[in-house]
Image (cartoon, rainbow, N blue to C red; front, side, top):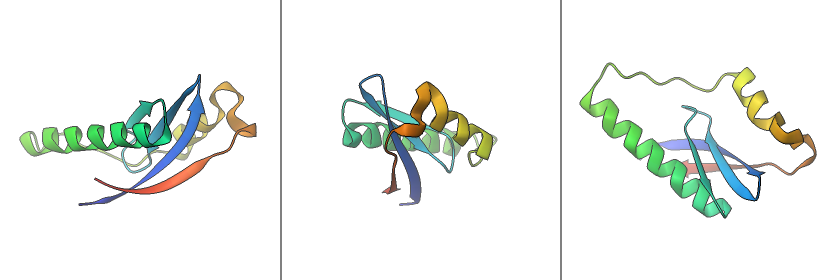
Amino acid sequence: MTLYTSVLRESAGHWVALCLENGLVGQGKTKEDAVLKMKEAVDSFLEAQNDDPGIQDSPLSIRELHEFLTVEGFEAQPLEMRAVYA
């Protein structure tokens, strides 16, 4: 298992988990649901990468992270980071 970093934020009554290592996201009604969906997205991506080694991933840029954090006036809302094994 690999360790990933997830940033969680609330958006329109749902939680969104963003993986900083590859930009994949998960969404759910709870934080745990969002993290689970993100882990499923990471697993699916890794399977696709195994099938096609030409598929590349890259860490999220600072600009992309800033956009994620500022959508919908997010600056005033709490933020949570988690270490996630997938």
